[in-house]
Length: 213
Length: 231
Image (cartoon, rainbow over all chains, first blue to last red; front, side, top):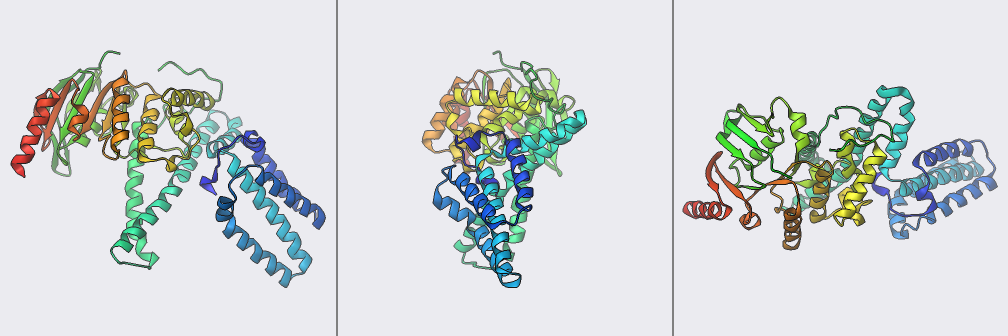
């Protein structure tokens, strides 16, 4: 779900990240307080409308959500068959609503804003909390950053192997992939150092003056 | 902006018994400096010394009077570095966040840092990239974003490690123009001889030693002769 962010200026884009996270949290609870299929259906439609309001190209949506929808269909079928058809409907609508709303929030929120919202939640814990939040935020950003890199390296290795006539066997990717990733992790560590990490002080809360560099 | 004084006194760098740089005794205070040399001649090590990423094994290096061994943090505040592979340098997932990151590390609040980053991107004509995921950038765009991420902290010296390696001709020329317009002191490590032709001073490294020190044209001529003598 990481690099799904899709820049835009829709109302959902403009909502503060913290509000969106809280909204998702509340929605998650609310969905499990009712079993009314009509109500749940309306919620699912509303979530779908929200997702469509972001104007993300349909092809991209289907490509990125295909797997999730397939899994959902399987869950619905399993519930309908093993428990009861109504149970399948209720479970399906709940999950569909939640997944759709969460996807909409992911599309409409910069990863950095999500991290900042999460850091904000830690800020009441004083300077310790802020320092912890800064480091956690950095760790999260690094994770986000490495996901596309891992995917890119896998593709690169696959192509290199295919070019030399070595096909299949994903297990063969593991060692060269690990070597490459460790090397690029080293480089990133060096770059972090060059850019001044570790910070002298944890960044202060907002609304501080920038001292002229 | 006056150039800083960079003073090498008998600097050697050895790693795992191998000597990477030796007997460096130099004072650099020109605004545009080039370091050229073949692969493995010690160019990257030289660049990393200036940012205190590599420390002298013996001898000492002073940047603006600061010993890199004792005052690494202060040195890094004065010396920015654009890496050979800028993708390694880009740490945050979104361009504007990455540019702002350098300020955040220096204790600037994040919304303030973001405002400065946006202003800088606009100034560089890169505002269209601000919200793009960093991994979706092209090679040329990456180089420019890496440069923006360095410029935001207003370093007095910017070190470029092989900046033209991954660039096509148009991007290379764009970078050259951008570099010429920089107020900061600049040191470029490269084997693109033409790129540094109008610089103030060039050092030619051969097997970790300074084999020539003077105008870029003469350094380039000497480098080309050395290469053809071997070939």
